[in-house]
Length: 314
Ligand SMILES: NC(=O)c1ccc[n+]([C@@H]2O[C@H](COP(=O)([O-])OP(=O)(O)OC[C@H]3O[C@@H](n4cnc5c(N)ncnc54)[C@H](O)[C@@H]3O)[C@@H](O)[C@H]2O)c1
View 1 (tube, protein in one colour):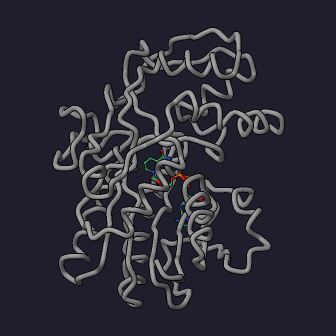
View 2 (cartoon, helix red, strand yellow):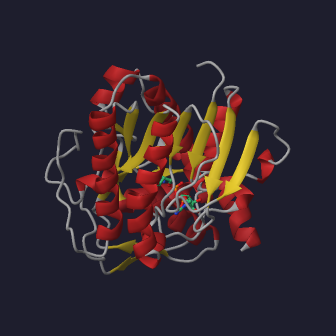
């Protein structure tokens, strides 16, 4: 890609900050936007001396115009169950008004647009593994609906701007991703287990631990997203690691990597917790030539230092 001016919303978050790093490494100029509701400037502090990076503190649910941009990556949204439960209305708003505002911006400057959607669009799936053509099994009024339905509205909005206005859009359905800068106490599986293990506290499993998840290391995810941004695919593409782990197996991997002697305890399952999640990545393989490279054990090892320092500074 030639050098472009790129807007990244959610830039102070886990994925947004890694995306900014990758885009800067490719030679682009990056404008990072974030309202710091769940993000942290610590994730982008290392970019403060970078002349091609600028940060704008801005709530994207309010219309804004930072000037000409060539591409918009829309990553702003509370993402962990702890955050979107606490910020339910804000989550609905960022996935509706926020998405429309960023689509309008892309339209104004005739910019490309990539939206960070989610495997949560599939809800508690009846189709396994999940293919992009599956419409999902989502409870529209349950506690997770503030997130799931906002993300489904965003997908509808992105497709509408593509169909009605010819906007050059992309939709990535991200499956569980982890790595350095994942919020330490946000209730997601890997962060919970790593922090509990490093503190020698019991690892809490909700349910009997037989529910499965797939975990994608962050560098693999960013590679897939950059490939998608350069492709001509307008329909959703799953990006995630199809290696399926039970939550119990994952807890054991974390114990092995951290060398922790923590025990594993079982807690009641929260409502609407999906039983199985695994991406079918045939489309990503075929369209983008993309494949995850980092296995769970290696990804956990690469994340260990980060979680160690999170525990030390907590
Ligand atoms: N991490 C994952 O496994 C995963 C999986 C599926 C989808 N996603 C999606 O990827 C995106 C990034 O997720 P993440 O894991 O980095 O979460 P994160 O919470 O670390 O980052 C989200 C960022 O968005 C910002 N934000 C929230 N509302 C905003 C608003 N109104 N205006 C401006 N900024 C706002 C937050 O302050 C935060 O910095 C989200 O859209 C999320 O839904 C993530």
